[in-house]
Length: 254
Ligand SMILES: C[S@@+](CC[C@H](N)C(=O)[O-])C[C@H]1O[C@@H](n2cnc3c(N)ncnc32)[C@H](O)[C@@H]1O
Image (cartoon, protein in one colour):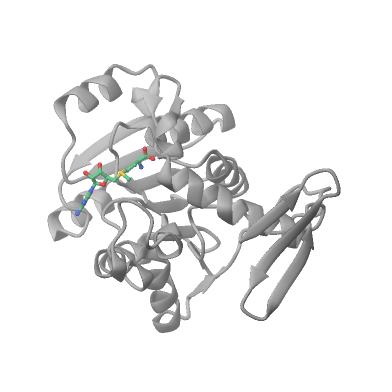
């Protein structure tokens, strides 16, 4: 049982060994409430309630701000994302590329539904977006992605397709070599491992998730490091991301 007393800021957590006391005004208190908020958001499908410049985007807004910080710091020439869905994330990255003044976006999906393709192709940012249809781990798809990269391009890769550990590991093996030094490959949606027992989850998600894939990939690939991207600005007390992407950022060492 958790008791929250907003008038004093006290949080009391009943645990097997006794009652733990935290305060709302501490990073530990914020962490606890954030974890509960993420879990409630999962149960309520909170991330299914946003759009970017007219296209639905299935992301936690905190993660969108954080990836914007990464994109601005990397200034990639090409952003490759597996998992297109409605195209909102592609439009989001394309809008950042336009604001920065460089960069284009390549989206890969096993099935780009005709109405989504039509909407993406009709979007005013479409010139910065290309679509590749096929499984992200099909060698032909990987070849098409390779061919979309030009010599000297700075490459950022985001993995948001099938989230099983095996699939994400296969994506990391296929796309890792395309990441340029100093840039990242991001295994999104490791939150799966932290919401087991919630609606629409599976018991094996405790280990069968993108975070586990990223951790295993890092062990076998010393050219990558699993790191937290630094906060470019922070005058607050919170040092951890509130995220659907824990343990996601694999940086290719410079
Ligand atoms: C979570 S959605 C992507 C959300 C999107 N990135 C966004 O932010 O709005 C996952 C997508 O992955 C696609 N997908 C599933 N398995 C795939 C595979 N093997 N290869 C490529 N895409 C796949 C699905 O068709 C679906 O559109």
